[in-house]
Length: 305
Image 1 (spheres, rainbow, N blue to C red):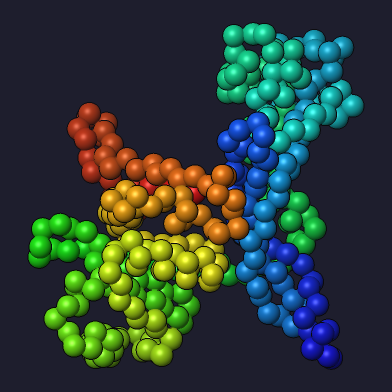
Image 2: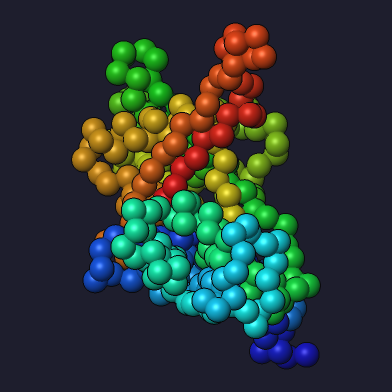
């Protein structure tokens, strides 16, 4: 078998899909796909793919068949009309398909979904894309990859800003520190290697760990997230995520650096990048009405980027 034969692509595995809504009428509706390319020789290559103006489907009961007032569990395809649209246009498409363009709920997809004649509108476009991968390459599967990220903040001078950040992926790592934090060391890198050796319980190869010193903490984040984007892990995990995400938000604001540029994959056009953070619910009422704190694993923090 030649090297060229070994590098033949046998298929693509979809790990995740993110919908990037159209921010204005003159820009495309975009889906960002994190996929894994499977080669004949067994090698796997992570890849980012952007699809513009992907058309998803909805189905509406034909006007001559609208003789029921309750939703059916299913309907014969011959009784339905099929419509295609981008996910950004689904509200207007549903309103038009149901002849509701001039009704009071024409901008409310959830209310229009109560119609007994509408099918498929509650299925997100990302599901259509994932399903298309699965139908075409049903046997391709790989273990998901994870990158661990962490920050440390100042507890001595009172500013509580980020002074250290690190990321580790598979057998590689990167650690950045501010110049102020290591100002007392003649050779910060040697001091780091000595400390790393003393605490290296997992026997990590220090030659595969990049250490760097910068003037500003925002430079730590820029360099580390550029490294993460280059590695293309399936997930980035953070212990006590709420603390670190809020510190990243603070750091970007203090340095007037767009957080969407920091966290978005570089392949995403600048005009389509965005960031939203949804803090989780830290407590819930018991049956007796008393608020009880949720354990960390039950708090659903969500970063949308």
